[in-house]
Image 1 (cartoon, rainbow, N blue to C red):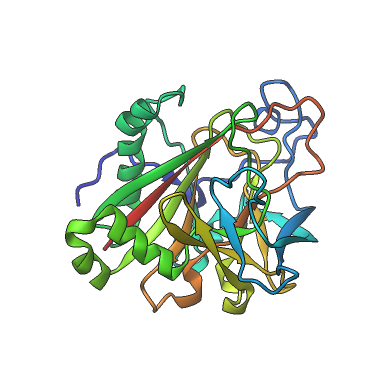
Image 2 (cartoon, one colour):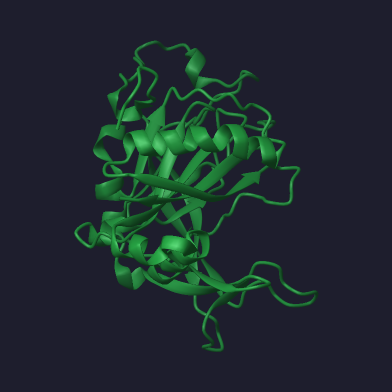
Length: 301
């Protein structure tokens, strides 16, 4: 594979800015002059609570009027989240199921047209993955979600994983039906590429758990009911052994990669990353609401 001089820089290859000055540095305030929350923080995260009637847990993507969207509850726990800023080199997709990249330019700025997002931004995401994911030979982007305070998709404040082994295989069959059997015989991964649209992020940052600290027994398959089919996501039980992180002050040129599934059994438990948006108690009053886009990709090879 040919690489070019314009490749994005992995965050762990960047030097950490000095913090010796007593005055706020430009990178520590947003365009409003408000301080960007940084460093470790304790916040409430919503984990899985089993249905009281013992029924299998399920979730409706488009619930009918009067039908609850889900039949399972929330177990709110106070969790300490450490800041990835300055410690990015400790984490990789293969070992922790998330990774960070900085200094990534995009020709798309508005993110108001799905057609233009697919025409301009999708190829940029595909290149990022092909150039930086070891072994990647083919990338298939199958959807994206934009979240804005004024939109109908708000940040998800519930710990979850977007895919399970069952739903990942079904995604291959759904989006690459012509050669699904051959693709399923090789290595395939599902990786989400997350970035803010109006950074730096001041509130509702994305928290991620180190996949190595998450037990398989903590993961609960949730039937994800679409109008025309059923899929699966995973909810997550709280376990005090889980280690949680967030990346402070993410900007528009930052990319957070989340691996939701990996068919390579040699990485086993490191193939999935629980994540959630969280309310940061340090968010200053008057800070702009977070806007973001998450693109989901099948990565083959």
